[in-house]
Length: 246
Length: 300
Image (tube, rainbow over all chains, first blue to last red):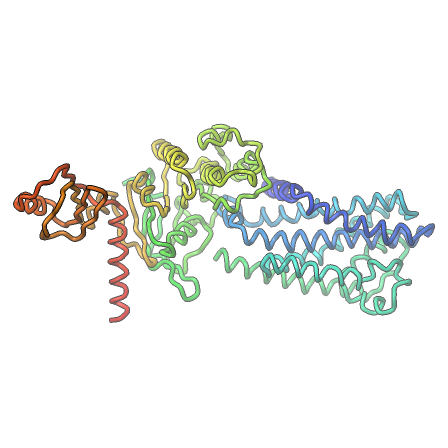
């Protein structure tokens, strides 16, 4: 266990020492918050709370897709990775350490969103709703963790950068993360949103933090994304293991 | 015979259609300083990767410290050099050493280790800001972090200047003198010649020769006769002639006979020297001979 923490600590250090990577994950959601949420939700606490939930999911989506997708792909290309496999530890320590370090990055990414929501909008939650909401954010990050791992293990790093970007934006917009409260979204987004993983994730957050009634289809599809990309991530991981370490 | 720390028994390793190692059996005994020699693609790296637990054999057995190299507990007793190009650029030198040390139950003292490799001033420097030579020294130092019984050094001094290379050699010799076992691969034959006691030449996935430095040189049986002479007649038994300023090098299988011929020919000469061929000459002869044999057996 202490080795897992050691790996988490050094991977986190490696990431935060490239400040642009961390700034990227936290500035983008913070800016979206300032441009799309603060001016448009006005005095409406319900709309502001919905929008804040959406931005939290937006933030963990970008943290997961980019940190896992690009991070794993880059590490695979470096000879440091096989060197670590010669140390007396199984591959689990590094893998679990990576998960912990990305959770830390996610925390950094959502802090500005929470601060902006608290001080610049009318968003209101009880402490219990806040905690439940954060738990829902963590739960909702699972499909993006798996998609990120799949991208990272399946693709070379140059391709991973592009694919993570291409996947990220349409998923966020399509799920209605940037179009305010669920009922106010354009019609085509209302039609496609339930099929995208970000929608199920954000509905979990809304259920936890407001009196939102979830769409069953969104939650079922969230489960489908987790199962499908869980299987794909395992496949890509095993394929990579087979190529490099068998 | 000393305890066997690592060995392969009839190990074959294939990468799809390519056979990297072909029924290789080799023992590494405690206290040895073994040089692995061979052209690129000969199978040296594959052999080291098998010992370090990075790869599994297609067939045959690999043993490390009495168990399997895939068992992390066995790997506590070994140290491996990473390629310096992969060292995490954002970590500081001290952090990198601490990180590796966290994997070992009895890691060595960081300060002493860094001092031994001339890195003690750089503890707080980020690795990305080090020179190539400093990175190389750090990479080699990492092999010694876990107080290993056996280290695998892959091209330890590539890219170092002469002074740094000799300092590193001294470090390796010191480890060996204190009872450590070393397996070293290098493109620099000079490096193997300076360090190794036992030389294993690998070519096309097989062990071509395995013996002491003297045996390897002697195996080729060629002597180098060097002298200063204005003009030499054609002499019997001379395999090759090289000129180096006023000096002339004659390569021969029988140096005694050549000297007799030289005296009988009654030509003036001075500063006669007879030396065994260098490892480089031996190496080229062994691998060339092997390639020719391999080609002949393919066409046959």
